[in-house]
Image (tube, rainbow, N blue to C red):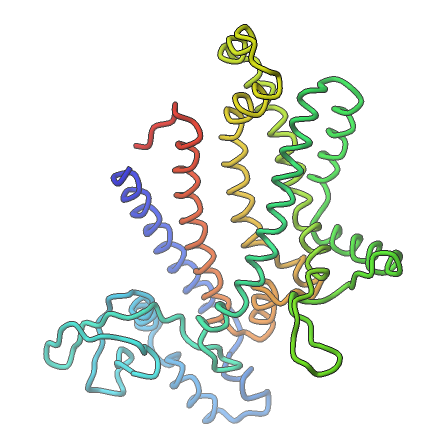
Length: 359
């Protein structure tokens, strides 16, 4: 187990290094000047140069890349004497940090990864992510929970009623759900349930998890605003999980150990829930984990339509305003989540299926 986790972490670090390199060079060769975006189109060149110098964009691209890697690494090398150096140890940037070793003007520092600051708000990117990610996580987890529970239920029912009208109706709905683009589904669901049926559902087309009280008494949780975006986001994984559960259940029901259980007189309910379902969960869990990672990374359109204040809105705003540190930080954060989710999925898959061995 330890060997497997170590190997996967090393692979994950290589993937992250590739992503960091690709993202850095991609966003630094794109047209557009963040300094001009910050100061406006009428800004003079001297002011623009000052901003670029403060952002470190006056350095050669290779130096900027090394400095970016140095900021991301928990163990990094910094110059603690020369404030003009691009690797200067600025306490305001890297706090909290601990100096482990000093060699002349160079220090080996232990710190949290520094994702830079937003060009527009000057807030730390890590603080922006810490504010937005819980909203996206709640939305993605709720959507995945809906998709998983309904997908297992519909898949089991479809498998037990194979080649009947129930099976055909489930197949039709699953095909429709998989072919429906999230952006179109979001607009359609928001229009129908929050506009046409607003008097019945009492749901809003836009809103966040926290709603400002009309009487000025602060904010309160409003779970109604979670229903429509979670339902929209869960449609596609629901369709996939339903068909995957059905196929896995049919395969499991045809195994020898199921026939043996029937011959022993074990009840049908226990065979389905205690034996067949457990054997069918492996592919379902793998798919669900992949979908969860996709929902965390790809909820941009749904969040934008419903004005849900999550990572999607942050990315869209960052792209519109050339706020590259924010966009780069969100991408790297999502990549780290994907690596960790994949490792946990492999471990859970092996726990559910004793035939799987981690190597």
